[in-house]
Length: 129
Image: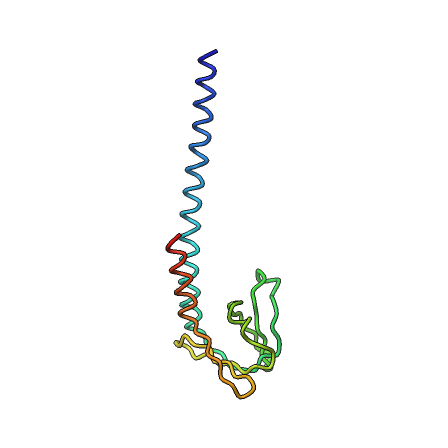
């Protein structure tokens, strides 16, 4: 009876060990992927250029529920949901390629949305995990 107990204990140890190793590998890969995507998103956002009056804010269900903005000229752009949430239909917005600032003009007021600090904070938080 003791041999069976030892075999069972060894089997459970191996199962727990491999599941634990699997979780460690998964979380390390996931962490690196998320960090990679945050850095890519920052670079991509800085390289974007757009300007126009917002006609509609919507979610593109065919593109992984991406937050979108459609301008009155018919052009649509994907935009980070955090920044889209700070904009309203009727706002005039402008983003120059190579700059990390979105300018929002509303009722004679100019609102500055800074892209780089938003992503840098997210990258820093992800690196701490």
